[in-house]
Image (cartoon, rainbow over all chains, first blue to last red; front, side, top):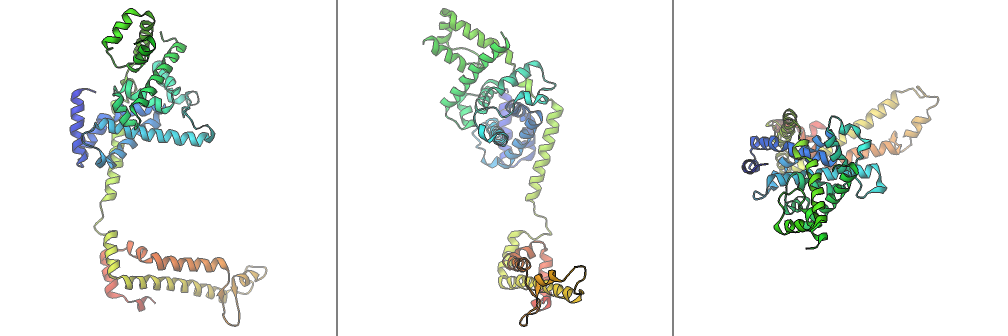
Length: 186
Length: 199
């Protein structure tokens, strides 16, 4: 997202915070794509990702009064999306297998082949890689690699220490290296 | 920095673009770390970018319309219809007529309980002793006839139901009665009815 977009988003967020519905609607249209991309890579489920993205915006409107004007609106939105998705994954994991709560991904790609229909091989590969990461590492990797956020911003979104975030990222990149070797990406 | 440290840094810098001077100098002189960096670069290129996962424009519009509709619904719940008495107003009205409304609710509960009892008694009186039953033991377990109290409800479940309803009506009947009526209806009722009328 470019500098102009950032300024536009900041301006719209200020208006939305004051209850401006059209401004918020424009924010929804501007930020729906990156939010869906985030929830999709976290869940690897097409429909669920879209549901969670929509819920993210509804919650954002309900909580807009708590948004600090000096913070980045998209980071604040990512935090809502992240928490919502993580809560969902935790709930699913508990429902599926109460004895295996841990860092295992909630959904196995192999058990959910529909999620990958109509996706390129590359996307399927990336989703398969995401499946190997626990949700915490997955979102850190996502926010850093795809959203170009700083470790400080990611720490803010995930409410983790910056050192923890860096560790998650390093671990994710290390797993990615091994995954790439297995797949013969080089 | 040693190689292990350089490789840790390279992993942290993965996807972020330019490498710091210190690392670039190390890569120039270290084949192992240079290979490591090249491997990461190849993986990075393979990963593509965020836009590969974006929904298309028409899908975004559909999703945004759904969000707008959900927010409209939330906002509409915040708007109080003019005809319905808001709960705050009801509370004020109720507190202003506290004694009267509490009495009204209790009276309504008594009327209902009494009605239930009388209807039950009427049904017993009208029913032939063994109508529809092999014997009348069913009735004898529900209603008892004693010298002191005729047709006293004897079944614990029936007694509990009547008792619960009367208690609920006494404790929360005021709110329940007032929550569904308009301000005009409330005023009209207060001006034109007395407890005696209801009883």
